[in-house]
Length: 353
Image 1 (tube, rainbow, N blue to C red):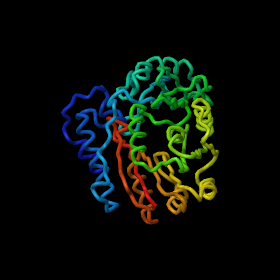
Image 2 (image 1 turned 135 degrees about the vertical axis):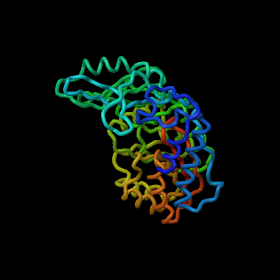
Image 3 (image 1 turned 45 degrees about the horizontal axis):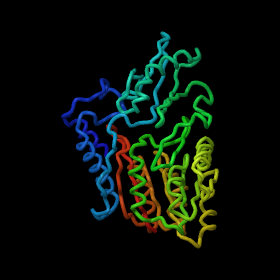
Image 4 (image 1 turned 60 degrees about the horizontal axis):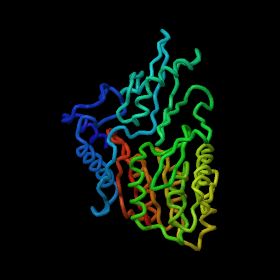
Protein backbone atom coordinates (compact mmCIF):
# COMPACT_ATOMS: atom_id res chain seq x y z
CA UNK A 1 0.00 0.00 0.00
CA UNK A 2 2.85 2.41 0.80
CA UNK A 3 4.30 1.85 -2.69
CA UNK A 4 0.99 2.84 -4.26
CA UNK A 5 0.88 5.96 -2.12
CA UNK A 6 4.41 6.98 -3.09
CA UNK A 7 3.61 6.49 -6.77
CA UNK A 8 0.55 8.68 -6.41
CA UNK A 9 2.53 11.38 -4.62
CA UNK A 10 5.00 11.45 -7.50
CA UNK A 11 2.31 11.64 -10.18
CA UNK A 12 1.93 15.21 -11.48
CA UNK A 13 -1.30 16.86 -10.39
CA UNK A 14 -3.86 18.20 -12.83
CA UNK A 15 -5.85 20.34 -10.38
CA UNK A 16 -4.77 23.47 -8.52
CA UNK A 17 -5.06 22.71 -4.77
CA UNK A 18 -7.38 24.97 -2.80
CA UNK A 19 -5.24 24.89 0.32
CA UNK A 20 -2.10 27.09 0.40
CA UNK A 21 -0.25 24.61 2.66
CA UNK A 22 -1.07 21.50 0.60
CA UNK A 23 1.97 19.18 0.49
CA UNK A 24 3.28 20.80 3.69
CA UNK A 25 0.38 19.78 5.92
CA UNK A 26 0.24 16.08 6.69
CA UNK A 27 -3.56 15.89 6.37
CA UNK A 28 -4.53 16.00 2.70
CA UNK A 29 -3.01 13.97 -0.12
CA UNK A 30 -5.30 14.34 -3.13
CA UNK A 31 -6.16 18.01 -3.56
CA UNK A 32 -4.11 18.15 -6.77
CA UNK A 33 -6.13 15.59 -8.73
CA UNK A 34 -9.78 15.46 -9.76
CA UNK A 35 -12.25 13.69 -7.51
CA UNK A 36 -12.96 10.79 -9.94
CA UNK A 37 -9.20 10.12 -10.12
CA UNK A 38 -8.95 10.18 -6.34
CA UNK A 39 -11.76 7.64 -6.01
CA UNK A 40 -10.13 5.37 -8.60
CA UNK A 41 -6.78 5.46 -6.78
CA UNK A 42 -8.38 4.61 -3.43
CA UNK A 43 -10.51 1.82 -4.86
CA UNK A 44 -7.60 0.17 -6.65
CA UNK A 45 -5.37 0.47 -3.58
CA UNK A 46 -8.00 -1.27 -1.45
CA UNK A 47 -8.50 -4.05 -4.00
CA UNK A 48 -4.75 -4.60 -4.26
CA UNK A 49 -4.44 -4.99 -0.52
CA UNK A 50 -7.28 -7.53 -0.40
CA UNK A 51 -5.91 -9.51 -3.36
CA UNK A 52 -2.60 -9.98 -1.54
CA UNK A 53 -4.35 -11.70 1.35
CA UNK A 54 -7.50 -13.32 -0.04
CA UNK A 55 -8.65 -15.15 -3.14
CA UNK A 56 -11.88 -13.28 -3.80
CA UNK A 57 -14.23 -13.14 -6.77
CA UNK A 58 -14.30 -9.77 -8.51
CA UNK A 59 -18.06 -9.57 -7.92
CA UNK A 60 -17.49 -9.24 -4.18
CA UNK A 61 -16.10 -5.71 -4.62
CA UNK A 62 -18.60 -2.88 -4.97
CA UNK A 63 -17.55 0.43 -6.58
CA UNK A 64 -16.51 3.05 -4.06
CA UNK A 65 -19.34 5.22 -2.75
CA UNK A 66 -18.33 8.90 -3.20
CA UNK A 67 -18.86 11.56 -0.57
CA UNK A 68 -21.63 14.07 -1.38
CA UNK A 69 -19.15 16.70 -0.19
CA UNK A 70 -15.56 16.39 -1.45
CA UNK A 71 -14.71 19.55 0.52
CA UNK A 72 -15.99 21.10 3.78
CA UNK A 73 -17.32 17.80 5.08
CA UNK A 74 -15.51 17.22 8.40
CA UNK A 75 -17.52 17.91 11.56
CA UNK A 76 -14.38 17.58 13.68
CA UNK A 77 -10.84 18.93 13.52
CA UNK A 78 -7.92 18.23 15.83
CA UNK A 79 -5.30 20.98 15.93
CA UNK A 80 -1.93 21.21 17.65
CA UNK A 81 -0.96 24.11 19.90
CA UNK A 82 2.71 24.78 20.59
CA UNK A 83 4.30 27.54 22.69
CA UNK A 84 7.95 28.30 21.87
CA UNK A 85 10.71 29.39 24.25
CA UNK A 86 10.20 32.92 22.90
CA UNK A 87 6.59 32.65 24.13
CA UNK A 88 5.14 32.61 20.62
CA UNK A 89 2.05 30.39 20.23
CA UNK A 90 1.37 28.47 17.02
CA UNK A 91 -1.89 26.65 16.30
CA UNK A 92 -2.42 24.45 13.27
CA UNK A 93 -1.71 21.00 11.86
CA UNK A 94 1.16 18.56 11.91
CA UNK A 95 3.48 18.83 8.89
CA UNK A 96 4.38 15.82 6.78
CA UNK A 97 7.47 15.10 8.89
CA UNK A 98 5.39 15.46 12.12
CA UNK A 99 7.80 18.07 13.52
CA UNK A 100 6.41 21.39 14.70
CA UNK A 101 3.15 23.03 13.64
CA UNK A 102 1.91 24.51 10.36
CA UNK A 103 -0.27 27.51 11.31
CA UNK A 104 -3.57 27.75 9.41
CA UNK A 105 -6.46 30.21 9.37
CA UNK A 106 -8.83 27.93 7.43
CA UNK A 107 -9.26 24.28 6.45
CA UNK A 108 -10.88 23.28 3.18
CA UNK A 109 -11.96 19.82 4.30
CA UNK A 110 -13.50 21.09 7.55
CA UNK A 111 -17.16 22.00 7.86
CA UNK A 112 -17.46 25.60 6.72
CA UNK A 113 -18.53 26.69 10.20
CA UNK A 114 -15.40 25.15 11.70
CA UNK A 115 -13.14 26.61 9.03
CA UNK A 116 -14.58 30.09 9.57
CA UNK A 117 -14.14 29.69 13.34
CA UNK A 118 -10.39 28.87 13.28
CA UNK A 119 -9.19 32.51 13.69
CA UNK A 120 -11.55 32.95 16.65
CA UNK A 121 -10.43 29.59 18.06
CA UNK A 122 -6.86 30.86 18.03
CA UNK A 123 -7.83 34.01 19.91
CA UNK A 124 -9.82 32.12 22.51
CA UNK A 125 -7.18 29.40 22.98
CA UNK A 126 -4.33 31.88 23.46
CA UNK A 127 -6.41 33.91 25.93
CA UNK A 128 -7.24 30.76 27.91
CA UNK A 129 -3.75 29.21 27.77
CA UNK A 130 -2.06 28.87 31.21
CA UNK A 131 1.61 29.83 31.37
CA UNK A 132 2.63 26.26 32.21
CA UNK A 133 1.20 24.91 28.94
CA UNK A 134 3.78 24.36 26.21
CA UNK A 135 1.68 21.98 24.10
CA UNK A 136 -1.99 21.16 23.75
CA UNK A 137 -4.26 19.18 21.47
CA UNK A 138 -7.36 21.15 20.57
CA UNK A 139 -10.60 19.59 19.36
CA UNK A 140 -13.17 21.72 17.54
CA UNK A 141 -16.49 20.33 16.38
CA UNK A 142 -19.73 21.36 14.71
CA UNK A 143 -23.22 20.01 14.14
CA UNK A 144 -25.98 20.32 11.61
CA UNK A 145 -27.44 23.28 13.48
CA UNK A 146 -24.22 25.26 12.92
CA UNK A 147 -23.03 25.47 16.53
CA UNK A 148 -19.27 25.19 17.09
CA UNK A 149 -17.52 24.31 20.37
CA UNK A 150 -13.93 23.47 21.20
CA UNK A 151 -11.88 22.02 24.04
CA UNK A 152 -8.45 20.72 24.91
CA UNK A 153 -7.14 23.18 27.50
CA UNK A 154 -7.91 22.03 31.02
CA UNK A 155 -9.48 18.88 32.46
CA UNK A 156 -12.99 18.10 31.28
CA UNK A 157 -12.76 20.95 28.73
CA UNK A 158 -14.28 18.64 26.09
CA UNK A 159 -17.30 17.71 28.19
CA UNK A 160 -20.62 19.23 27.16
CA UNK A 161 -24.03 19.20 28.84
CA UNK A 162 -26.72 17.42 26.85
CA UNK A 163 -28.29 20.79 26.05
CA UNK A 164 -25.15 21.69 24.06
CA UNK A 165 -24.79 18.39 22.18
CA UNK A 166 -24.22 18.57 18.44
CA UNK A 167 -26.68 16.70 16.28
CA UNK A 168 -27.32 15.50 12.76
CA UNK A 169 -30.59 14.31 11.24
CA UNK A 170 -30.54 11.07 9.23
CA UNK A 171 -33.78 10.02 7.60
CA UNK A 172 -35.85 11.76 10.23
CA UNK A 173 -33.86 10.42 13.19
CA UNK A 174 -31.75 12.86 15.20
CA UNK A 175 -28.40 11.60 16.47
CA UNK A 176 -26.62 13.61 19.17
CA UNK A 177 -22.88 13.57 19.89
CA UNK A 178 -20.39 15.58 21.94
CA UNK A 179 -16.84 16.92 21.81
CA UNK A 180 -15.53 13.95 23.76
CA UNK A 181 -17.39 11.16 21.94
CA UNK A 182 -16.57 9.28 18.79
CA UNK A 183 -18.81 10.07 15.83
CA UNK A 184 -18.25 9.72 12.12
CA UNK A 185 -16.49 12.87 10.87
CA UNK A 186 -18.40 12.98 7.57
CA UNK A 187 -22.12 13.17 8.33
CA UNK A 188 -23.07 13.75 4.68
CA UNK A 189 -22.27 10.16 3.63
CA UNK A 190 -24.05 8.41 6.53
CA UNK A 191 -27.42 8.08 4.71
CA UNK A 192 -25.67 6.17 1.89
CA UNK A 193 -23.94 3.86 4.37
CA UNK A 194 -27.22 3.02 6.10
CA UNK A 195 -28.94 2.51 2.76
CA UNK A 196 -26.27 -0.02 1.76
CA UNK A 197 -26.58 -1.86 5.09
CA UNK A 198 -30.33 -2.15 4.61
CA UNK A 199 -29.83 -3.34 1.04
CA UNK A 200 -27.61 -6.20 2.21
CA UNK A 201 -30.77 -7.67 3.75
CA UNK A 202 -29.17 -9.39 6.75
CA UNK A 203 -31.57 -7.82 9.27
CA UNK A 204 -35.07 -9.14 9.94
CA UNK A 205 -37.97 -8.53 12.37
CA UNK A 206 -36.97 -11.66 14.31
CA UNK A 207 -33.24 -10.90 14.56
CA UNK A 208 -31.13 -9.59 17.42
CA UNK A 209 -28.68 -6.91 16.34
CA UNK A 210 -25.44 -6.37 18.27
CA UNK A 211 -23.94 -2.91 17.91
CA UNK A 212 -20.39 -3.49 19.13
CA UNK A 213 -18.13 -0.54 19.96
CA UNK A 214 -21.41 1.31 19.64
CA UNK A 215 -20.26 4.83 20.53
CA UNK A 216 -23.24 7.18 20.74
CA UNK A 217 -25.47 4.44 19.32
CA UNK A 218 -25.63 5.46 15.66
CA UNK A 219 -26.16 2.00 14.18
CA UNK A 220 -28.16 0.52 17.04
CA UNK A 221 -30.60 3.42 16.89
CA UNK A 222 -30.82 3.73 13.10
CA UNK A 223 -31.35 -0.03 12.64
CA UNK A 224 -33.46 -0.81 15.73
CA UNK A 225 -36.66 -0.58 13.70
CA UNK A 226 -35.46 -3.39 11.41
CA UNK A 227 -34.95 -5.99 14.16
CA UNK A 228 -36.67 -7.54 17.16
CA UNK A 229 -34.11 -6.11 19.56
CA UNK A 230 -30.70 -4.42 19.55
CA UNK A 231 -27.88 -4.62 22.08
CA UNK A 232 -25.22 -1.91 22.31
CA UNK A 233 -21.89 -2.60 24.00
CA UNK A 234 -19.61 0.38 24.72
CA UNK A 235 -17.05 1.19 27.43
CA UNK A 236 -16.64 4.96 26.96
CA UNK A 237 -18.62 6.85 29.62
CA UNK A 238 -19.20 9.98 27.52
CA UNK A 239 -20.43 7.93 24.58
CA UNK A 240 -22.76 5.91 26.81
CA UNK A 241 -24.26 9.12 28.18
CA UNK A 242 -24.93 10.38 24.65
CA UNK A 243 -26.28 6.98 23.57
CA UNK A 244 -28.86 6.96 26.36
CA UNK A 245 -29.78 10.53 25.46
CA UNK A 246 -30.27 9.45 21.84
CA UNK A 247 -32.50 6.54 22.82
CA UNK A 248 -34.63 8.74 25.04
CA UNK A 249 -34.93 11.53 22.47
CA UNK A 250 -35.95 9.13 19.69
CA UNK A 251 -38.28 7.12 21.99
CA UNK A 252 -36.66 3.79 21.15
CA UNK A 253 -37.46 0.99 23.59
CA UNK A 254 -36.10 -2.20 21.99
CA UNK A 255 -32.43 -1.39 22.62
CA UNK A 256 -30.37 -2.56 25.60
CA UNK A 257 -27.23 -0.61 26.51
CA UNK A 258 -24.38 -2.49 28.17
CA UNK A 259 -21.45 -0.65 29.73
CA UNK A 260 -18.14 -2.43 29.34
CA UNK A 261 -15.80 -4.10 26.88
CA UNK A 262 -17.04 -6.30 24.05
CA UNK A 263 -14.63 -9.02 25.21
CA UNK A 264 -16.26 -9.10 28.65
CA UNK A 265 -19.93 -9.18 27.64
CA UNK A 266 -20.48 -10.61 24.15
CA UNK A 267 -20.30 -14.32 25.01
CA UNK A 268 -22.98 -14.04 27.69
CA UNK A 269 -25.19 -11.97 25.40
CA UNK A 270 -24.92 -14.55 22.61
CA UNK A 271 -25.96 -17.29 25.05
CA UNK A 272 -29.05 -15.26 25.94
CA UNK A 273 -30.01 -15.03 22.26
CA UNK A 274 -29.04 -18.51 21.12
CA UNK A 275 -32.49 -19.33 19.72
CA UNK A 276 -32.76 -16.48 17.23
CA UNK A 277 -30.89 -14.98 14.28
CA UNK A 278 -28.05 -12.75 15.41
CA UNK A 279 -26.20 -10.09 13.43
CA UNK A 280 -23.33 -7.94 14.71
CA UNK A 281 -21.97 -4.58 13.60
CA UNK A 282 -18.30 -3.90 14.38
CA UNK A 283 -16.98 -0.35 14.14
CA UNK A 284 -13.72 -0.40 16.14
CA UNK A 285 -11.01 2.28 16.41
CA UNK A 286 -8.48 2.74 13.59
CA UNK A 287 -6.17 0.13 15.17
CA UNK A 288 -8.87 -2.50 14.64
CA UNK A 289 -9.76 -5.31 16.99
CA UNK A 290 -7.55 -6.42 19.85
CA UNK A 291 -6.16 -9.93 19.63
CA UNK A 292 -8.60 -11.04 22.32
CA UNK A 293 -11.55 -9.48 20.50
CA UNK A 294 -10.49 -11.04 17.17
CA UNK A 295 -10.32 -14.45 18.79
CA UNK A 296 -13.66 -14.04 20.54
CA UNK A 297 -15.56 -12.74 17.50
CA UNK A 298 -14.01 -15.01 14.90
CA UNK A 299 -14.80 -18.07 17.04
CA UNK A 300 -18.23 -16.87 18.19
CA UNK A 301 -20.92 -19.47 17.71
CA UNK A 302 -24.33 -17.97 17.26
CA UNK A 303 -23.51 -15.02 15.02
CA UNK A 304 -24.84 -15.46 11.49
CA UNK A 305 -23.50 -12.29 9.91
CA UNK A 306 -21.00 -9.62 10.88
CA UNK A 307 -20.90 -6.15 9.35
CA UNK A 308 -17.34 -4.89 9.84
CA UNK A 309 -16.82 -1.16 9.25
CA UNK A 310 -13.18 -0.09 9.25
CA UNK A 311 -11.32 3.16 8.59
CA UNK A 312 -7.95 1.44 8.14
CA UNK A 313 -7.47 -1.16 5.36
CA UNK A 314 -4.34 -2.65 6.94
CA UNK A 315 -5.91 -3.44 10.32
CA UNK A 316 -9.06 -4.60 8.51
CA UNK A 317 -7.21 -7.15 6.38
CA UNK A 318 -5.28 -8.36 9.44
CA UNK A 319 -8.53 -8.91 11.35
CA UNK A 320 -10.32 -10.52 8.41
CA UNK A 321 -7.49 -13.02 8.05
CA UNK A 322 -8.35 -14.39 11.48
CA UNK A 323 -12.04 -14.55 10.57
CA UNK A 324 -11.47 -16.44 7.33
CA UNK A 325 -9.17 -18.90 9.10
CA UNK A 326 -12.08 -19.68 11.40
CA UNK A 327 -14.40 -20.40 8.46
CA UNK A 328 -16.04 -17.00 7.94
CA UNK A 329 -16.78 -16.07 4.33
CA UNK A 330 -16.26 -12.59 2.91
CA UNK A 331 -19.47 -11.85 1.01
CA UNK A 332 -19.13 -8.14 0.14
CA UNK A 333 -16.44 -5.46 0.26
CA UNK A 334 -17.92 -1.96 -0.06
CA UNK A 335 -15.62 1.09 0.19
CA UNK A 336 -16.93 4.53 1.15
CA UNK A 337 -15.04 7.79 0.72
CA UNK A 338 -15.62 9.18 4.20
CA UNK A 339 -12.39 11.19 4.00
CA UNK A 340 -12.06 12.99 0.63
CA UNK A 341 -8.68 14.53 -0.19
CA UNK A 342 -6.93 12.38 2.45
CA UNK A 343 -5.32 8.96 2.17
CA UNK A 344 -7.98 7.39 4.39
CA UNK A 345 -10.91 5.24 3.31
CA UNK A 346 -13.80 3.58 5.13
CA UNK A 347 -14.69 0.00 4.16
CA UNK A 348 -17.75 -2.06 4.99
CA UNK A 349 -17.29 -5.84 4.83
CA UNK A 350 -20.10 -8.36 5.15
CA UNK A 351 -19.03 -11.67 6.71
CA UNK A 352 -21.11 -14.84 6.83
CA UNK A 353 -20.50 -17.71 9.23
